[in-house]
Length: 179
Image (cartoon, rainbow, N blue to C red; front, side):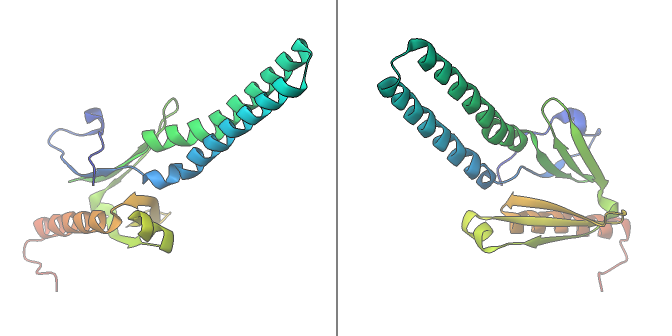
């Protein structure tokens, strides 16, 4: 689990980070492939325009239109997913779960650990290849579960968080032996 920087302003005094991560980089594969296709298509179109269009004004117009379309596609299908990936973090502290996302408009969710009733994981075929999976946090809210998709080393994260929950329960109820 690579450490992900959580801004200390989100932590309460004395609170410590147990696990901090972001979505696995596999979510960027389509963005990368899109970027390659756009670069190829722009290069191909530019070569075709240069070889087949003799009028400079028409060539310039086609170049500008191609460039604008390429920029729109790159922003929507490459930059947007990259920024979403970079700015979304999932952090478990010794007191709560914190989800933060957003670059300009921020969004967050916090669940106190004492409201979390379970932490499970699911690993599909593709997830196994990439070493990630879905962490399912079950809490006492109306939504009931919070699935965190494509978490790297999901089994290790689940074990660490489950141990923290167990330690917290044992600390709150020292006579409870867990049976």
